[in-house]
Image 1 (cartoon, rainbow, N blue to C red):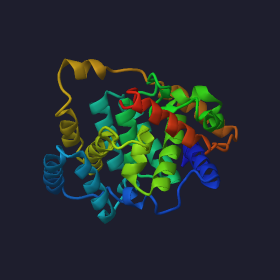
Image 2 (cartoon, rainbow, N blue to C red):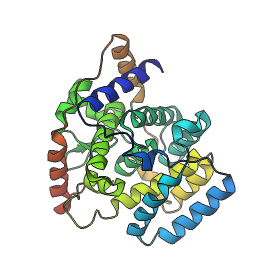
Image 3 (cartoon, rainbow, N blue to C red):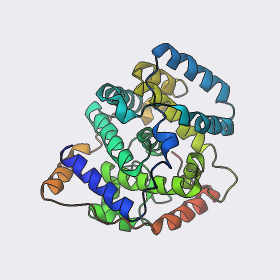
Image 4 (cartoon, rainbow, N blue to C red):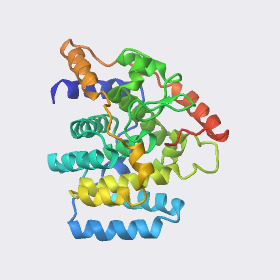
Length: 299
């Protein structure tokens, strides 16, 4: 597994021990979603899915959750070719350098296995929240790949050296996934977990946030099935022109620097420490308040 894998496993062990990772099976409806089906079936089913559900976000979410338990294989079971296709999709759709897209995909697999969360769901949240920009910030205090409320979850980042690590891709993904896993476990629903993650747990609507995440996940699923070209087409269908190109310029995301630090810590025998779960409710309330005031963390 290597040094990075060892650190990821250590994180999962610690977080599971303190109750952050939900019981096995809670996320079964998401982990078993990805299935290697024939290319023609991918195109036909996804096109029909998008055409029928685009106008109705609620139906989209319900349909996704209803269908997910029937799937047969996860991204981790699909192998290296599937990982490479997902990385290629991230690279082309979000202008993330390919090597860094590969690292993101590998991390999502390791972290997803540790928390029993679908790795494509983790990537979908990162795409929706920050377009895979680990330096992203908003006015509410949400930071990084998964727009974690750093000031509320400071204790969780102590495992990675402190709050500054929130702007690094790996620790932000670990903490974000731990929060997401806890919310899905607590609410008993992926869509409700996403609603709370967005900060709309006490509101009647999440402003289409869960639907955005699920639509992004449907594109990642196409890529995971081996058709990154088709996934890119779907991603760009509603995001074209000068505004899109300006927003997604090539950029240096700093993954190499974090990788070097991570490898060094692992080689020195460092382990991931306890991440405090009590801050989750505080962060959710703060995000909910910000959303109600019109300052949501939606990307």
